[in-house]
Image (cartoon, rainbow, N blue to C red):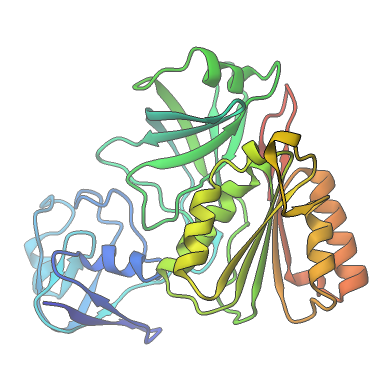
Length: 345
């Protein structure tokens, strides 16, 4: 049986389905409540039940004491409603509200999508989860003290594994390791979440996402979050790559387009090969946006990719299409042997 939960003081409401915890349902519906371990051990998700009854579930007695239950407190990562509820919980609305952590992680899966793009999925210890906003990134900490930054490609509600899209940079210290010697079950260290690249949900403006290459990763996270949160804003993704083979998750974007009437997908190839038999858009990806929109004054634009693309998009959208400067959000990916895939949000 499903139950309705009302969040105070915001007044937001969401439905908890059978076998869901309060936190799972809140994240699925796009409401970012605080959490840490998600297994009843840390107490980060603790909040107050103002009205209704819950099953507290299995948890550490140190994270929630019996006296706290008597006062109406519950761990929302473990509690399940037994009736409609009103709860008191702080909603996270910005990156500054989230704790940055340094954690070990294990390589769970390595999937080579193209000759130079690897999808890597990593798992945190059982006692830890990473809370983040869709679009943020993490640093992979190397043994020599340096770091390599990669955007999280999974949305916050689907965080059992963290997904990274890694482009192989010739001579790159970490990416060469990923493509040659890194193995599943290897241990890495990460720091995050970092960055201010995430959807501004206090707006109802339509959104344009412009991704270059593996800039698709944060766009993927943001779009999957938007779909899960049932955002009804118009959304369009322009994904620019060199050739057809570089659209390494085109089938996913096409699936989104088929499933969500408010979303459309525009792939753009800058250098299609004869074997591609490409009949779609060609050229620079930001120029495709310019061709399609004469006025961006009522839009938000989220751009992720190489600095040159980001800078060109910013300049042209603001100067020639009336995009307000404060409605342009960007994540610049630096690809170099000494600074691989580094988002500078």
